[in-house]
Image (cartoon, rainbow, N blue to C red):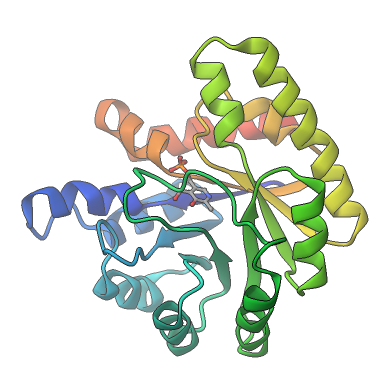
Length: 244
Ligand code: PXP
């Protein structure tokens, strides 16, 4: 079974654009649950540009499905994660100036620091995931430092598709395919996400080792036109069709 994690960050982006109390990301999360999301993902950024601390409090109180808490490997975020003990923590790189999470974590370079992060989170009962590019040395490093899960960054694959650079897209897809298999062979659980749309989801959903996709921006964008429930249902349908 391929799980769908719905990322509700950009509901908060719209809310924060006006400093209003709406749209409420928790309401979106509850709607996503009803539409078939298997989990909710939220990224509490250091600059709080979308999700706020109070949103995490409310999500922890109101969700019936697991929360995947995305965070940078900082002491501040570690304290917040240990206070809430969400089902899953996904460590992501973060740069203030970026529009979105542009690349994966350089686990190979930050091995010692990240190892110290993973141990307490695991001890607290969180499933720890690391967001990385489809790269053998990053996967090996993630495995060495005790991550249970890796999330493969599908952003480059999606960008190549959007730009019509189909040879490069197919090369990136081949790399994602090989590295999903490699990570699985090491005993890691494999997730994938970033930039996925109705047009790009199926080849990723078809990878047999991938057990979870995390999708946000496109679903929230599509919700403007069709509503959130139909957008999620269609994504779910495409995922199931690719898997079958
Ligand atoms: N997975 C991770 C680790 C992410 O950081 C993000 C973006 O916050 C996503 C998945 C979802 O990406 P998108 O919003 O482009 O669907």
